[in-house]
Amino acid sequence: MTIAGLLKAGTLSAALLLLGATTPPSEQPLAPREGAGWELVWADEFYGTALDRSKWTPEVSCWGGGNNERQCYTDRSENIAVEGGLLLLKARKERFAGPARPPEIAERDNPTLVQSHTSGKVRTIGLHAWRYGRIEARAKVPAGQGTWPAIWMMPDNPAYGPWPRSGEIDILEAVNIGAKCKDCAGGVGENRTISALHFGDFAPENRYVDHRNALPSLALPSDGFHVYAVEWGEGLIRFLVDDRVHLTVTADQWSTAAPSAKGNPAAPFDQPFYIMANLAVGGRLAEENNAKGVAGSSFPAQFAIDWIRVYRCASDPATGRACIR
Image (cartoon, rainbow, N blue to C red):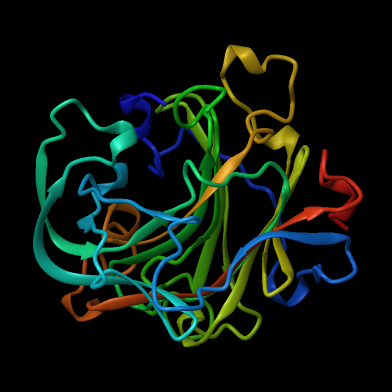
């Protein structure tokens, strides 16, 4: 992937928003993993006292993810820790200097940038990637204006070119949880998490499908742990929270402008993707919504992940569709 393409990665500006099939929380169909034919092929339960470097590589960068975020991601115990069976990604308000970009998109001199916060981000890039399956994460998101935790996937080898032509799968985003929200039911503030797909052509012709999803109880997702998942098969992707399907997207709703994808309706979501987990500070999506900006009272913040597991469809690993019921 080129530097220019990756610098756009993660942006939420889009030429067109396409809506997948969504249902209100009380009507969301249940799709439990048990009995559907999924078999475990990879997992991290975050036992022990240190990050498993055979599974994860911490990102070290201060570039703000292409979204004007305010953090430097570091490889320090202050920002990434494994404690009590949990992966803890910790955001702190502290002035910090570090490399502008991660190695795979660094310019030759990779200048130093200074940010107002530090945080943690881990990736399976260069270690593990998957095509099709059910990916689950049990996690507790932080609350606070300006917090932006995420568990998401990017193409391991961007066969269709720079972002967004090769796609992006966002399993979980939780932006400004608990902050004021005029569009949220329940009276507790922002109580919706987000799942999304990004695809299309270079900005401003990039497109996405997303859904903001509340729990059936309308409680804050930061009050406890929940299981966030994606079921991904050839031509079909659906997102779940606690086994409830809240967004379903089919291949006729996505596309890529890459010439090499011509005649392949499943592209770009037909290639291996790797997993990332991070806790961003601020950025456009956070700072332009809810109470606006970044609240000092939100930090320090902590994104706790109990486990991340990857399953494949035992009877249909080639497409994964037989297990998506």
